[in-house]
Length: 112
Length: 112
DNA sequence: AAAGATACCTAATCAAATTAGGTATCTTGT
DNA sequence: ACAAGATACCTAATTTGATTAGGTATCTTT
Image (spheres, rainbow over the protein chains, first blue to last red):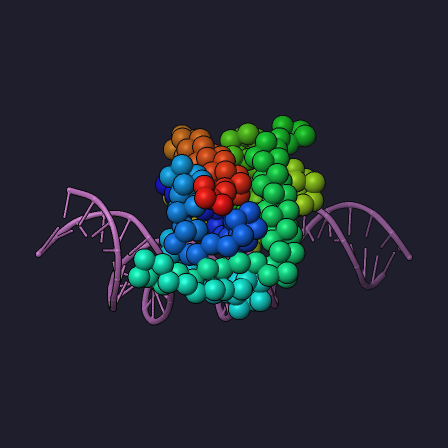
């Protein structure tokens, strides 16, 4: 039904982690990375991504560099020091949330 | 930061799966099951849960029975046939989404 | 020449969670 | 006896965040 979109609320953690692993990326590249990484199962729309990137930049976690490539503009994003810290924390939080979720999905009442 | 709440968007799948495993449950019991199952790491607020339950009921997935226990009302929810089908589908979708997410979180550019 | 991929973006709408309450009963601690 | 906390239901208003639905522009492929 809505398997094709990322689990809600994890978008910023995903973006930060992708930048952590790949040094710097531009928006369109991130959307492709998500599609590619998930073998087409998940995609993030640009309408969700760009505002998220701008928000992370406004929060002082990302630095940007704009370059020209093949006649088109590319705006590269990368983590600064604060962003690197935040990236680690958000990844941990996300992994713990997933781990908790998996436990909950197996939960049986004691007096079942 | 917001590790203490369930991954957004998965609430209905969680509720359906808990009912699938436990036959019937009432609202407050579900909030406790989530806390207990996640060892206190995750909780769902009643303000999120009750509207979600009402929506699932309105969608024709749940049947209810109201009982008196210790002088207080309890409204039990259980899956009907349609709800059982939907529960299986949503669990599959959620597991696949988590699996995709885990892959994405490891994604490295080919030309990194 | 048209279609599709690449590359950026925003505004309006919608969905869903949070914040912030409300009512009421029973149990536990002081 | 009284207060606090647990149990048990609920809703309204706000906020957050994704979706829908656009927009511009260049380059590549058919």
